[in-house]
Each structure stands twice: as structure tokens, then as C-alpha cells.
Image (tube, rainbow, N blue to C red; front, side, top):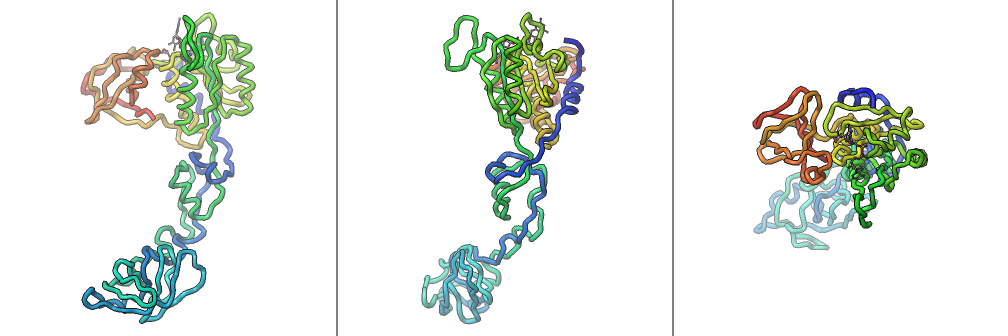
Length: 399
Ligand SMILES: Nc1nc2c(c(=O)[nH]1)N[C@H]1C(S)=C(S)[C@@H](COP(=O)(O)OP(=O)(O)OC[C@H]3O[C@@H](n4cnc5c(N)ncnc54)[C@H](O)[C@@H]3O)O[C@H]1N2
Ligand code: MOO
């Protein structure tokens, strides 16, 4: 393991190598969770026509100006208009139509009286309250004007945005797809969760955790079952996966051991380096047949932190998004922390009320218990060897 890089240098090298994915035209429901790659404008106003907000009667407001329960106004009902009626309807002063929510307002009518304020008549209707002009009429264009851009490129398509696209008549949309990411763990000691353990074995947690983290970062994760420590098998599995991957993530096998299989398999292709951080010191990155490959360390907390620091920003860049870490902010340390000089330290912590953060007592890179109980990473800069209780510190809220 040759050079030592800072976190920023390693991230910069990664971001210089990854490219946004080519946009695709997808059907609306396939586009859920992807990033919009075109501005979308409304071809018609929304609503497209004046329509009723209530079930009731379309009237001329002046006709019912004096109506009260004591002095009701009775009008002949000259028709019925339902949502979806495409015929033309009209009234003149002295008459009204029944109208349903969403139905086009007849020409000549300028207000709707809800059915609750009437006797509900079909041939003629007694109206017990006056309404001002415009009452319960939803005007054409009052939601969205014709030609208005309703969604800008770069927005993630969640449920409301998918609904907006359908509302302006779009069946398909141009998006940057979710990156497809293959996740492989390595290690002879690893067994599938659900199967029995022999002495010396553990259940593979990294591949599940990192596949879930890929999803949280907007990608589609494909988990591969754990690979044994044989470089030729690791290389063969990697090459086989490349055809369906926009990126590959491995965990384990990158340190100083006698059997550091990932390093052996990819030496000469990827750059293996020590990064001045804790956890997550041994890192590898490079392109294999043009596909970005991230080789994260095997210790589970190291793999997770490495993902948030390096892989998440890269997956965002591939989606055309700013390559940011998880939501950053500041908090006040509830307890003092110590940190090794020259390393950026990502401590696991819990946010408490009042803007404070409590560091976990277990900070080992194998201690999943503390990671699973954490909701934030505390970022201690390289130059700080200790920070006092009460000091403000950078935190990342975990997704
Ligand atoms: N002599 C040195 N030894 C180590 C150094 C060093 O600088 N000199 N660095 C340490 C650091 S820091 C880390 S981090 C680890 C990284 O090691 P590897 O990436 O080679 O990972 P492994 O040796 O394969 O595994 C480390 C550890 O993590 C467990 N593990 C691995 N994969 C999984 C998985 N999928 N699920 C759950 N647990 C996993 C594995 O059993 C080991 O306990 O190296 C240190 N050593
Ligand atoms: O630096 Mo290793 O990644 O902490 O345990």
C-alpha cells in the first residue's frame, strides 16, 4: 500500500473519474426515484377549464344575493353537469344547473352553491344562502399556467413529482437512471445469514448493509454472495458482473494481510492507498473496463463510513447531482472526544434534543452495535487531537 492521501484528495480522484449516466426515456412509474434530466413544462393550463370545487348548483351570484333561511330564493334547475361531461352547457339569469365537483362550470354561471345550503331539489331548488361571485369555482390556470415549467432538471422524482408529470399529460420522461451497483464481499470466514456458523466463521453483514446504503443513495444494489479468498475467483466474479454494473463495490481484502485477495486481484488496475482517516484507512479505487470499482475495507464500520465519505458522493455525481455527503450540520459535543493527530475521524454518535450530540462509547471499526444505534457521524478535523464538551462540531445525519 503505497501513498497516503487525504480524504479530500481521494474523493477528488474518485470524482474526477466518474461521469453522469446517460439520460434515458422511461415510463412514469419506472422513473420513480430517478433524477429528472429535462425541464418539464405544462402544455395546457391546470386546471384546463373553470370547474366546480363542490357538489351543488351553478348559479348567477346576483340571483341569490338576498338568500337566507328566512328569505330563500327558488330557481328552476335546467340541467345536470357531471365531471367528464364534454357537451357545452350554459345558463342565464334566473336559472341554475346541478353541478358535481370537477365538472365544467356552465357559461353564464359565476358561482357554485354547495348542496348543503339548499333543499337538494331536482326540478327546482330552494337556496338558503347567498354566495359571492367566483364562490367554489376553480379557475383555469390557477394551479399551473400554460407553458409554466413545473419541474426543473435535477429534481428527484418522488410521488408528488410523478403525479405532476401525469397531471401535465406526460407518459414518459427523460431522466438519469439509478446507478446499478454490484456489491461483493470477500472473506473465507463469511457465511450467509440464516446458515449455521462453524468456529471461526461470521455472518456476512457488509454486503447487505452496503446494498441497502446504495439504495439510500439513489442507486439499485445487486448483492452478490460472499467470495472466497482466491484472487482469480474474485477477478472472474468481478468481470462477470461488469456487464450489468454502472459501479462495483467490494469489501474486505485490501489491508496488509497475507491473503488480501482484492488487492492481489486488482493490483495494477486500481490504485490502492492509505487515506488519512479513521475508520477507513485502506482504500482502493479505479476503473475496470471503464466501470468505477470501489474496494472498501472489510471492518463493517469502516466499510459503512467509507461508503458515506467516498461512494455516496460518486453515486450522486453519476445521477447528475451535487456530490454531497449525507445531510451535514453542526451540533454541540455532549462529551469530550479524543482523535489521532493527522487523521479525519468519523465518530459514531447520537443526536439529542437541544442540538447536542453524544459520541458512542464503542468506537471500534468492528463495533456494529454502536453503528446501528447511531444517527449521526461526528466529523473531527485532522488537526484536532481533542475536543471539549460544549464545542461545536460538524455532524452528518445518517440517511
Ligand atoms: N498489520 C495491519 N493490519 C491491519 C491494518 C494495517 O494497517 N496493518 N489495517 C487495519 C484496518 S484499519 C482495517 S479497516 C482492516 C481492513 O482489512 P481488510 O479490508 O483487508 O478486510 P479483512 O481483513 O477482509 O476483514 C477485516 C475485518 O472485517 C471483517 N469482515 C470482512 N468482511 C466482512 C463482511 N462482509 N461482513 C462482516 N464482517 C466482515 C473480517 O472478518 C475482519 O474481522 O485491516 C486492519 N488490519
Ligand atoms: O481504518 Mo480501519 O478502516 O479503521 O478499521
